[in-house]
Length: 357
Image 1 (cartoon, one colour):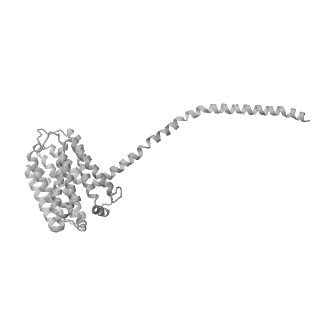
Image 2 (cartoon, one colour):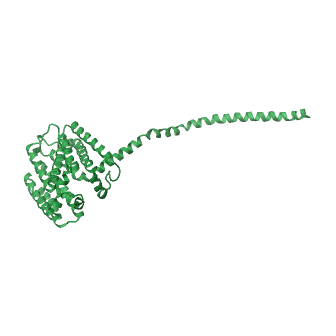
Image 3 (spheres, helix red, strand yellow):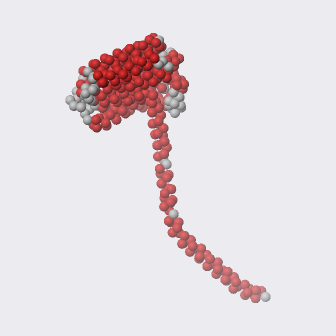
């Protein structure tokens, strides 16, 4: 009976075994048929493989963007006072034959590349002064109240990191001046003036010294930008030095405009500014008279037309009237902006003859 059972099951077992073998072959065939499909999917994997190679650039770009933003915040408040007027100072000098040894008026297109270099030169030197001032303890305390967006009070940088950037900027600025062949003595002079004003605190101890330092700084920024903009072979004439002396006198006698809207903060820090020493009323009257006086004298010195003289007098007169009639802090802040416009008009006065104005 056992052999009969074995004979009965044997065909079934053989059939089952054959079925299993056949099924295995079909599975292999299916795998082989699917192989090309996996190959076709490789481009998708290749696309993903590009991403890791680009990822190392992302931290670098992010850090560079953050650094640029940080350095910009150091100088943001002073761009309208120093950078833009200094560039216009340079342009006006370039188009004023009486101020340089150049015998021709250069085309505007040829000045553009040098003007961009001048902008870099001015901004670097401005950055040095701003970091040197904002890294000091009393400046940090003041900025926490009035300008918390600046890099140190906003904790974008520590004072130690700011000092490292300050030193680096000085090296870069001096190297740039050497490479350009112009602006080196102005660059070094600005470093000295900044040290006297910030580290020695001379700008806070005497209103006279404060105004002298500001006048010298304005002149260094302007003449440095002009020197970088002009060709290496061009030198300033005697008339240029006379004009620069007038500019220095104008700034020295009216720069206290920047102190009118910040008297409370200056009083808390015991700064000796013109409105705090001589009184708010006297400071306003002196500013009005001096601005009006210079608005009449400067156009006459240059032989400007009645229209040019009228525009300059109009801007200066608006400053005088505002100091007489509008005395709130926000009014004084706006008047200071107009004073910056008046300084720009002053800088442009040297080119009136070139353009027949």
